[in-house]
Image (cartoon, rainbow over all chains, first blue to last red; front, side, top):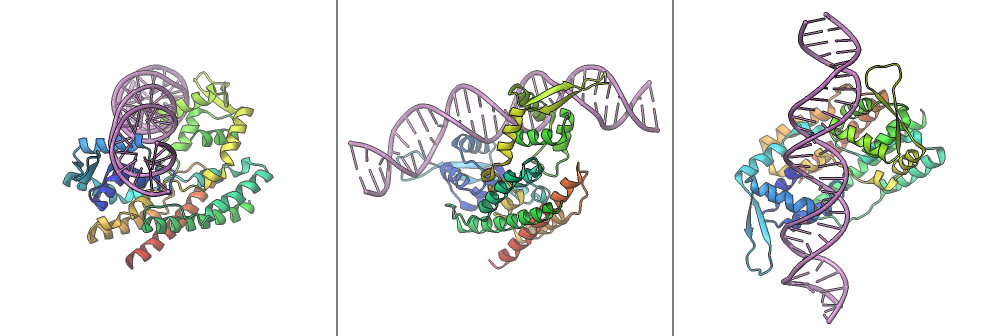
Length: 159
Length: 159
DNA sequence: GCAGCCATGTAAACCGTTACATGATTGT
DNA sequence: ACAATCATGTAACGGTTTACATGGCTGC
């Protein structure tokens, strides 16, 4: 999360912690909860380590901070971003984990689970994402996950 | 992790916490670290909640426990396993997260990152997985990720 | 005999979650 | 006026990581 946040700050320029939090909260992945208790302490950590700087935002009586990335932060961010080994790693997929244990359900449960899952995966749910790029990426990943799911089921039926 | 562990115990019958730990440690996903400090306290929690039971393993002076799932544990496990809503959720992918910020790298860094990532994704790395089913699932997911990666890059080059 | 793995755990530090708290702004 | 949202945080709790600790077994 720290790496992604550094990248976000580098990309979207001076940005408030609230905005950072919202981007995570509106992310299609449940992995990024975007809770205040996770984000505010994190940006404080990043600032303490000298990876980001805060300026209090101008023209506003309202308390508001804006963060920019430092040159040290940029170096750390680039190291995180260009880490191809971690990028290639498998990550976490709640579907893959469950498919692994499909045999533990009885036939009725299997049928119900597979049907509901297919619906959830195909959902052209236009969730309120932050940017178009995010929505596009989301759709792309959704499609390939659906392919993997269908391919697995096909093989699994012939077990 | 608790749900997956319950499923693992239900599937593989009486099983030692060490074996549970090793399955996670050898998992292709870095998400499951398989550290002792995560697994041993977890099985203790599951036992306290009455979801699993331990018998000390026979014929062995060596201290060794074996766990089986209880009927309550089975119900909890089935609720976890058949949760199609969570299954359909997006999970976490270290590649997807990074691709989102690809423009922050310069051309040379991009080229290097994309090439190394492609290699890592295509790696027919026969990592020492626990079961054949796990290896099969792993390969399937690997392939779909490679497709998603290539598809993204193709679109991205025409930005 | 000793290195390395099997096997089980614990302790401190760290990080995230959930829930709470506060006040300012915006829209109706 | 009042509700909803913007905006920033904190506190208690819980789970994971990292590191340490212990002892038995296995192969050379």
